[in-house]
Length: 320
Image 1: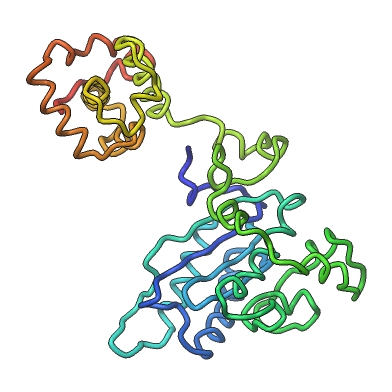
Image 2: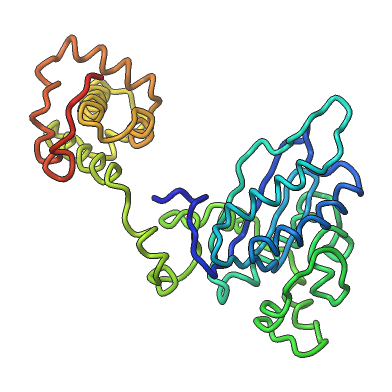
């Protein structure tokens, strides 16, 4: 699957968030929230980005944005750089405070924008910082109610979707009346299981340039899966058994053979192979070391011949 941080679709709508830990909060006083609000419009204009919703929590920032031609990574880098450079130095603490990389999820506006904005506006309630979105000052909820404060928010798209006309925001209030289910958090933060970093229906996923980036697994993934299936067939085992947490001897031996062959022909890194097999890299190394000595007949490149013909016929083998 593609790196979800690098999925760039010009004109797409993204949910972005970045978090830190309680020991190094992003915001610890009112002036810092205000400074971030002042810097955001500069980063938006610089990256040709449209702000659709936002929420600032002490330990995380959450944005819903429409992206132009420049990648979302450029916008996030510019915004966080500006804040880190201009923020106050705190006692016994230096900058930066961002300990994690940002996350980005591409969404289909027609289906998911309303639910996403509701999720973002209810984050302070879920965190115990407010009893209702109306009472929290650091989100775009007030902008949707017509109270212009904070960064400039493009409210028209969502208000039109929920049926608002003119200055009537009653449909928006009805849409935001109840807190969203907790399951939405994982969906918006990760995307769907089969399309990480993207949320949409089949028609949305089939559109260019989205489809080429989410439909085709990397060659190494396809080859590792093929290798696992091949070894499972030769050893009269199932793929599910090999990829289970069981430490049965025949399963450990099969995993060792898979790891050795995959590494020998440069199909992937040991970490990637271990992830497919649901075991640690160190466990794979120990298994290979043990069984190459006791069962050398199983550690030959012959079973990998069909795989080499796919795309690795010119790759020189290497030692484990």
